[in-house]
Image 1: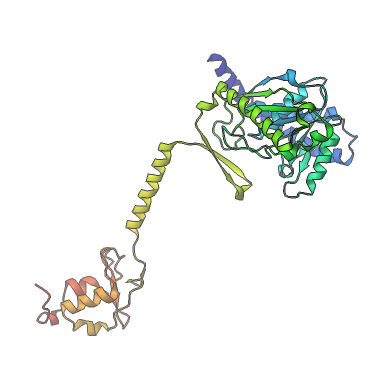
Image 2 (image 1 turned 135 degrees about the vertical axis):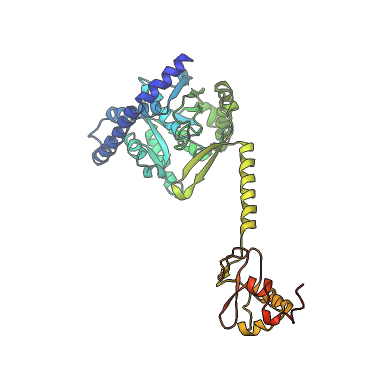
Length: 391
């Protein structure tokens, strides 16, 4: 308990300084990448990977990640085709750290969607490590991507997320697309399934807990060699890889307690740069919110009043008699005229004559406003004898 306290305290004290250094790393990478693309020999591969590695370490520190790596003995010192599951933008960051720290192993290339180039932070770093970009909207580009992967596998490992995108469901994996395995059939490279557990929702920007301690486990499974996949189809092989990852992912989830965490609701707002919002799902909270909305709706319905134009309810006609003619009407006749033509209601707004909030005025044919009290509650003196409606 005490160790966790001091760890958290040290993390929060160091956080602003590390964030400042990370920002400097991003800016430096973005400046150097243009020079590298113009002249690939200007920066060595080790220099470029080391630049990205430093930024990766700072990022993991900021998000307070406790990383445990398993199954390193399953990795080989030759080009491999690594297939991880994909839950978060943190997945490639973790793999960069793990694979760069392995001495004597080949360098690696990621296969990433082309939209990554629009990210002002990640685009520069991804270019520095020779990421292979795929345009999912252009089928013709897929052949070029496959050829790039085949070329890379001659001396580097290739990391490909066969799910194609992040899967925003805690306990589920997406469809592993068999077409992404085409390069291994051409190069006979060993396939290494990789299980990443604990990154789900780890980098959501508006999550209140994003700086809290996170336990993440990455496990490299037993490699699938060429003699085990050459005689099977792409889709069947992809399904086998998925099942291997799924079984291990379930065990690791139980180990680090992901099965006890409340379901998380992620809403992608495509209108605002696909920003993601994450909130704990609480049935009682949702019911309370729905009840509040219903009460508010009913209240608004009760409080809604007819629109009044010059003291007359919208949609009702003006009285088609002048003020002098109306004076000759007895109580019942005047009241009938008022209700039928003027649309009298207790909920109408302020009377334009006496400013009373309980009734409104009426507009006669000669454009004269007459108060309800004057002509309904207080009959004219000259009509007292004729007013059969009063008691």
